[in-house]
Structures are given as structure tokens and as C-alpha cells.
Image (cartoon, rainbow, N blue to C red):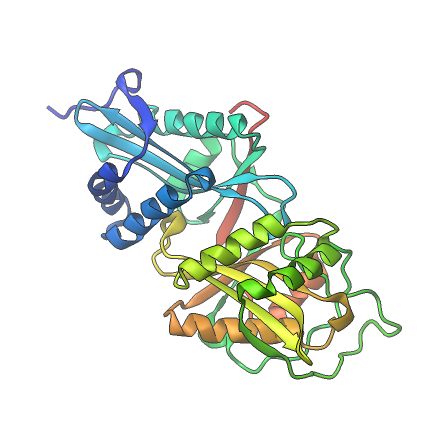
Length: 341
């Protein structure tokens, strides 16, 4: 006889380092492969920055029955308020279809409400029927955005000058990019100028925050500084670049490597913050940053890069298309936490 977990007997608690082996085993049963290195790194990251991570375990008489892991979104994709990014959820095969996943999500949602978080976001492949069904049951809906991605080999082709797009301040990939104000001829391409692009350093922070403030109208020094510290501490997880022209910083880009989030089978880099000084719009700076990012990612053996764009940002979608991005096979979802499931 096969024993199954009774949701009324499940105990929900915080996930700990001691749960690593059990999480790896359950994840392998779901994904069909072992991802110990990714999961170990993910748990270590949560222990290093506990305020930015929410992760819970469901336990029964047999031990760990399931888990859920999420990270706090602070300013990624232009967010004005903190959110949660659901990255992993799984139940032991014999413990499925008995409400354990719902209890884990409820624990995550309660944690989010206590921390004044308004929504949970995640993504899933459109063919993943099991995950799509669970997201629907938890109250998720399609987000009004689109995920675009690019194969790195395709994206490394010579890049054109920045398309002459015009966006209101704060309407870049999630509100980060401002390609400048309308020019007399808004469709002319500007001459490509040479920008020096290199890794961001702590000394760059002040100028980066200045550019970001000019774009978003907000001081996000704490968020940008935190991501820069993350890049300095683990360059295999985060890439942060600064673009200079005549010695002055005129643009920046920050990306992170997803080494297994959302059940990915291959490493993917996610561009979550990019900004160009409005005075240097339409001059090739954004493309220069992307070109250097692609080179760095090749060294990290990352094969794809993606970002999230609002559906209404047609000029921005055109910009990424010019850099080799196309619509992803993944769909973005959001779950408001001020509404019941």
C-alpha cells in the first residue's frame, strides 16, 4: 500500500540547509535530472541574504514532502514597490494532489503580506500543463508583459546603432530604460560612437544612481548598491556593466544568471536593469552594453539572455528585436496578494 500525505497532517516551516538532500531528490523526480549545485547555491544565497528570500518546507511523517522558494524583487524591471519572484515549488510524488502545494503557497503569500509585498510573479513554459494548472488554481493570471529572449550566438551578430525610440521616463524593460526625448527627426539613426564598456565598480555607484534618478525620478541607490555588491561577491551570478564616453559614465546594465529557476534546463541570463543618460540617447550606448554583456555571458557558458517588456512598449520591443530578441516560449504570470485565491 502506498501512503499519501494528508494535508491536515503537514507541518509548514522554514526551509533550512539540512533540507538540501531532500529538496534535490524531489527536484530530480520533477525535472528528470540532478541539480544539486544549483539548489545548494540557491539555499546558500538565501542564508546570506535572508531578508530577500522566502522559502518554506512542508513536512509529514516521512520527512520533507515539499518546498517553495521565492526571492524579493526590489527594483528589478522598474518596480516601485517590493514583490516576490516565485522560483521553485515542488512536492514529493506520493504527496501530490492533496493540497500540500496550496498550503505552501499560502505560507508564502502570508509572508509576503506581513512584509507589505503586493504581488507574486513567476513564469512557466506554455507547454508545462501541470505547472500552468497549478498556477491557475493558486489564482495567478497572465501579466500584461511579454518575455523576450535571444540565443547568444544569434545575438552576437554585429549590432546596429540604437533605434530611435522615444519613451516616457521610467518606461524601459520594466521602467528602467529611457532612450531620450523626441528629436526633431525621431526616425533618424544617430552615428555610432565608441563607448568604453567594462565591469561596474563600487566607485561607479554615485554616477549610476544619478543616471537612474534622471530616468526614473527616484533615488534607488540602496537597490542598485545591493545588486552591485551581489555582482562583486559572485560574478558567476550577476553581471554589472558601465559604459563610459570621454571618461564619464553615460550608461549601465545589470543582469543575473538564472542557473535553474523555474525549472530551466539551461542557464539563462536575465537583464533586469539598464539605463542610458538621456544626453547620450540614440548614439549606440545601449547596444554597446548588450554587446559586452553577450561577450561576458559566453565566458560564463550562458547560452540565452532574456528580459521582460510591457506589452504597450512597442518601441522598446523594437529595440530588443534589433538586438536579436524574439518572443520567448515562456509566459509571465502575476498573483496579487490583496485578493483571495
